Image (cartoon, rainbow, N blue to C red; front, side):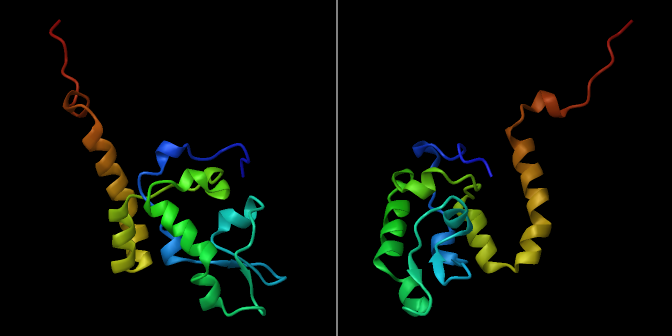
Length: 134
């Protein structure tokens, strides 16, 4: 963990899918956090198991406010999100992970990343070098 790492406000073009898809994290004392980063970076819990049902915590005002800010592109205003160092995936990747089995997504991801990388390179860098006449 790098506590000084995080995303600038401009990085939040797409909402973090964890707030809609989960998982939520529960500490041994019952504190519930919206994601792994929120408790690793000492964020405030959004509820406590034993005091309220998990469904109520999932739909709590705190979670809804985080979702609203993310959807509005203002996730950088949330303290824990501004310090988060998790990759923010493109919505197409999130949608694919909801449609396809996780194992399939993990197998396809390296190929998709290579294609994305190669598509951004100028064509001249992708062609083999020619020998210079002597």
